[in-house]
Length: 86
Image (cartoon, rainbow, N blue to C red; front, side, top):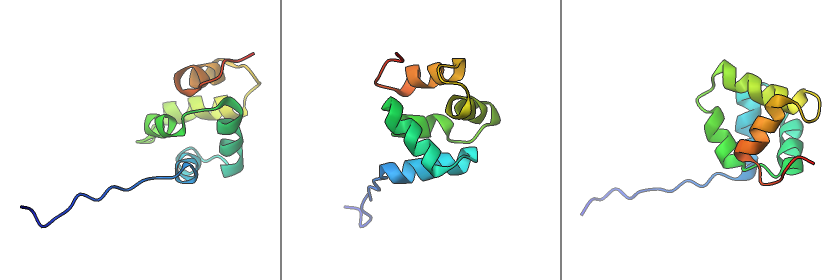
């Protein structure tokens, strides 16, 4: 039997928000508000953005800061949200 044990690390919502903010250069409060407003699955969004790629970051930044209901926002909400845009 192996002496080493598998260690499970559980990330909190705050950890994911901090990570997304860091990868995309956005404010933590803005990411948190966006996630709460559209009921986004933060874990899936984090894994979509990681590893950081400029094209994925741009889509998220446009969704976050663009006009309400823009193309990128709809795409992010469709992929990772649980609510529909009204």
